[in-house]
Each structure stands twice: as C-alpha cells, then as structure tokens.
Length: 257
Image 1 (cartoon, rainbow, N blue to C red):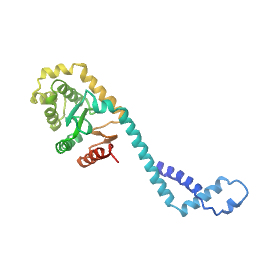
Image 2: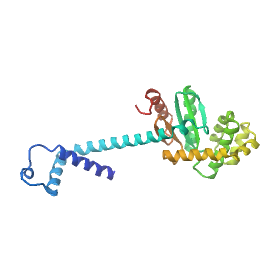
Image 3: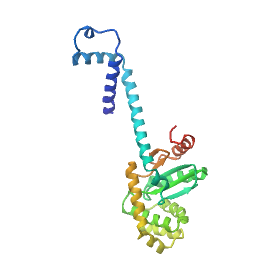
Image 4: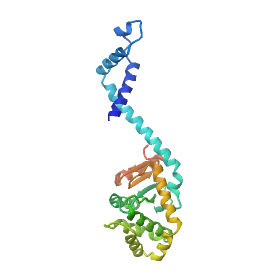
C-alpha cells in the first residue's frame, strides 16, 4: 500500500505540474527559476484543492499494473503452450477435441484439490466441449511424489483405467503415498507388476521433470492451479469462477474479453 501511495503521489505530482492553472502564482510571476520549496508549495496547494487527483492516480496505477501482469502471464502461457496444452506426458479428460482446454496442476495430498475435484467433474459433465488436462504436480512431500509416480505409471500402462484410479485416490481421506496409490491402482484393475515396471522407466521421471519445469516457468508454487486461455488462476477458485472463465475463452479466445 505504501508503494502504491508513493507511486500515486509521484503520478499526482506529474499531473499537478502538467495541469496547473494558467493563472500565474506570485512565484511564477518572478523572472527566475523556481526552487524546490516553491515547486513543492505549488504542488501541495494543488493537491489539497484537488484531492481526487490522488484517487484517480491510484486507479490508473492499479489498471496499468494489472494490464502489465496480464500481458506478462499471457506471454508465459504462450511460450509454454506446446507442453502446457499438448504434451504427450499428460492426462486428458472430457472431450479430447474440445474447443476449450482447462489445465489443472494438482497434488494427491492437497485438500483443496480434493474438494475442487467435484467442480471439475461437474464442469466435464455439463460441458461436452470441454477438454481438461491434468498435470501431476506433487509439492507436498515424499508421499505426494510417490503417489504421482504411481499415477503416471497407471496412465502409461493403462490410460483407460486412469480416470477411475484418479477419482478413487483423490477421494481417499487419508494421506496418499506409494502403498495407497498401488492399492487404488489394483482396485482399478491395473496389475501391480505392470505399475512397478513402469515406475522404474525413464518416463515417470521425465514426466515429473517436465511438469516441475513448466510450473517454474509459470511461477506456480502450490496446488490447485489452473490455466485457461492466456490466464493462470491459482487456488481453488470454485465452480462459478472456472465456468465463467471457460465461457469467456469460448466467446473471445481469452479468459477476459
């Protein structure tokens, strides 16, 4: 807030000097350069008589900073669009050929991710043209990494079973780790020996490295986090916010028209 006020004051100073009344003050009437004290007195008098200048400056500063942040994020998303939306190392739910893609970065031990899963399922059920991309982003410890490794293995050896496995593991009330994930995979009909073999392959490590690198590029540090259009949306923002963002992308090609 202090930074905003300081910037606003600077902007107000510029505005004040630019738009000072043409009627000269006694200081301006003198045939000599104004000193610092005289300028400050003029500006102070102007701002005291026109305090809305500071308010307008704050509004304009906020608008500019938001625009700059949105442009920077859009560039980051654009630069990463290949692996972000179309990596061979990802899970696609909903309509694979849908006209709007919603990407979610998640962790199997993230309570917010678990609660947000119902939002995702509802969106997929209601929107036949929604394409959802899931990115395994384990950030909550060793158990999360182990669960993600099993999940990647499931998607590698039995992608048709991934949906059931994912739903079961996200619905699990306890802590997710290798043992729990293997149990869920077995319940989904994926043999443990196939999972173990896939975990030892280079693909699991390559998938995690790809997602960590992508998250770093986008400035993500927690879960859940969503990407839709050219916007990164951190946190469990809820069904309504996601639905609105999807509608905006479908209408104008970006999350905010």
